[in-house]
Length: 520
Image 1: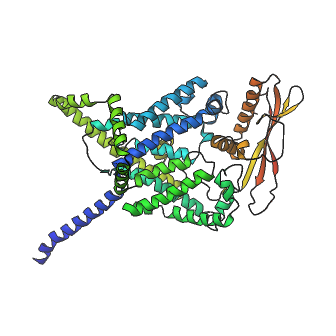
Image 2: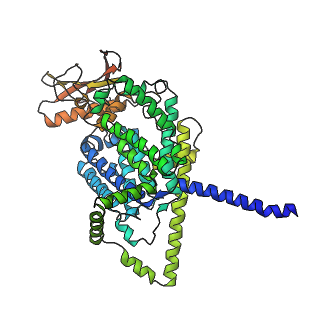
Image 3: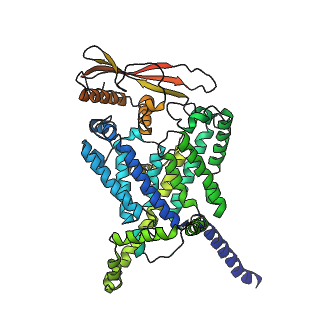
């Protein structure tokens, strides 16, 4: 009798335990719908900013007259499938930029949100494949954030599409929200493991050496802080501790989670003010938006009402909804549709729900395996690796790890003109071996810095010929006196933050005949 009477109680205890665990998991992966809306707007703005930044060097990086013409792309990257490679003309690439910008704007206002997000991801992948030499960690993260966004209900708040939604939920907890939050945590965990493989992050010297890279990285406030070594050592220890604490982002909830997320956000804003690393800090800030719980958004809404901002925003949103065509008519037709049409519609809705749960679950497993493979813990099965490669979702987060760069430098490119005189083919000035005044004179922006760093450090020496060919063509298209040959030098300067003088080493990378073969 005792055993029989205790069995139902044991079952209830087990059921209650499972329910508590399920509730705890649901809470930790729940995202406020306002956070998803802000995340959508941030992604759209970042996509626009990325396009604007790349458009400054559209001809140099994405056309046949640039550093990677299509014949070089197809030769060196045989698996490259890119819509941006259908033509080498600048006007075609410019048109694709305009189309991508239109989809980004659609994301911002929340119009046809799912379609706009999918198309934005496809065009972003195509753009990245067109020239891998200019990509950095921020590009990988942005690509992954837009990928996970395809499976999220981004249009329930602050969106034109939101007016046709019959849902009134405060939070969303799905496989896709789990994947989005885990993506950020896995990035930091993988980077933390890489950092512990070196010594400089553990002995406090890493940030000191990063800030000594005057030409490649430091800007604005970074040039001032470079002299304060004790402060930079403290920043090193703080950053290592923060990165190691990243798993707590999934353990904590409420205000403690918001406080930890804010610490990460603050550090990345600090990077924005001190380092030339493009949009990476802002991309990471956007990735942290979903970590802020409902209490933060409630407080933000109350503050907006108190200062009189909520009413104008609501009026602006209402006018936008009225100006942009929606699908309210479709919804009314659906309500009065025949039973057979409703059956088909319900079937499609169930299919979409299944797709939105299954696909992110599969990719979440692959992404976790990809990161584990990057730190040497496992291997991704061949079919999974093929999927990761095809979708550009493979990852390795080695930002400044296991050690930061310890060599700075700049290019000197003596070019011999047909009249016997000499000019620097890189800068169009007289040839000088003296250190440039600052990093802006060497690297116009973060894309050029990444590209030229890869040309100097990458194993693929073909790109040195491609760069030399571009410099010859660029000069000869705009001057009457042609370049006949150039020499590509990298002047390496070891970083020695504790010494006043730093030696230099002139390294010959390429001798190039401007009238010779494309690849030399």
